[in-house]
Image (tube, rainbow, N blue to C red; front, side, top):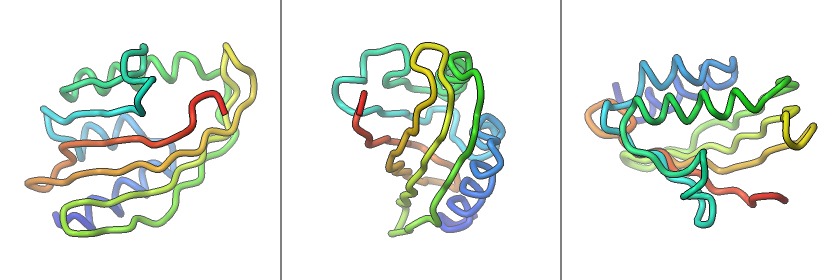
Length: 124
């Protein structure tokens, strides 16, 4: 599966809220997830390994009371890398309704995502 194929599959699954399924299907067992500086040490911070990434996703979902909408851009592919813009409209237990906007960058190796990195303004 080419980087472009992985990117298109991830986008399609994210648009349907199938984040965990996408991780099971498309991520390497030793994939790394990187958050912005200042968020790296938090409960949803940097982790290594598919099991840790899945657990991070479960912690995020546990804080969501309602998902109102998901928007995911078309992927921008360059070699073994691709990026997407993602906007989530969610109601969080702790913060109420918020719109979360981020740039997500992925590295693909041997047909699997080996790294994801997120760029967003925390608390803003």
